[in-house]
Image 1 (tube, rainbow, N blue to C red):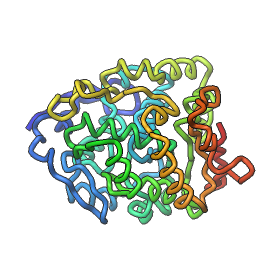
Image 2: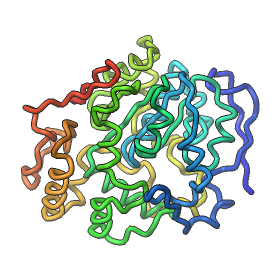
Image 3: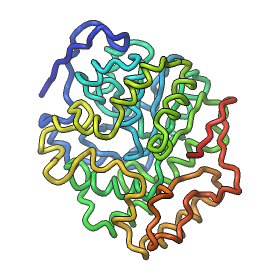
Amino acid sequence: MTHVSFHFHSLHIYHREQLTLTVPFQAASMARLDVTETFHNIAFPGHLHTQESLHYAVNFQFQDTDTLIVSYPKSGTTWMQQILTLLYSQGDETVSRTVPNWARAPWLEQYYFPKVLEMLKEPRIITTHLPYHLLAPVLEGSKAKVIYVARNPKDVAVSFYHFHKMANFLPDPKSFEEFLEHFLEGTVNYGSWFDHVKGWTSSGRNNLNFLYITYEEMWEDLEGSLEKISTFLHRPLMLGDMQKIQKHCTFTSMSKNPMVNYTTVDKEIMDHSKGQFMRKGKVGDWKSTFTPEQNQRFENIFSSKMKNSHLKFTWYIQSDQSSQWRNPPLFWPPKSQNSTFRANGCCADTSV
């Protein structure tokens, strides 16, 4: 079994001792590259998940000081992991430059989580792609803070497709046309985007300490987003700290950081010759992939599945509206509808 050691420095997030753990993205686990774990009718890549790890996750006891990052894949998870790491260290980049993101903000449902958890000090940053209904029993009644990161689903679909092409622990996506059908049907790994976002953001989440924020909001106004996040976490930032965090949270900075960009992962697991984990980081990149016919089909299904949702999504940046894509609205729902989601007395305005 392959192991790796990291020295966690004196920053308060970690114990001052050496951590030795099984590396989740090394060749030792290659035997499970073709395995799919099905849990509550949702498929998960067996390279990172087992039945035991998934059962552990849904029975996990959160501490009141925990912060849980929740997202559907390819929605800004890595970005939020980087933001919270830097926010909790007041902009000091030491940990974000020396410890991989999966070790400083580990995924709750992945098999290595219990080992990493032993080394985390409070307040702990935990990450998950699990749907709400699987975690509701253990979260309700907890004071743990939940940050849900959403992204417009057209960009999610395109990014997830390209990730499938370079991640050997995910099924071959074949053509984008075929992958898009599976995405719309919810038969991809991690299940339905529609069910995931609606489950976590329905008005019934009032009993959670909950913040909803979008990838597009962070992309357009990173400073404002950092202020929102720091206020939610009750961790005010000095101007100098804010500037340092912004510097180390740009797409350019993260794409060059091997603790973030997954370039240290074995080629047999994640083949960067087929694509980059940090690919473009743009808003509206779906326009370079979707055909008008695919876009119309997506719009029809989106309108049907999200008809009772008041969430707002940015499909593209207003200064970049090509004539071919004038049909889809800039926001969903139209601006005349209420777009504010309230949870636990916190107003999470999703406007960008």
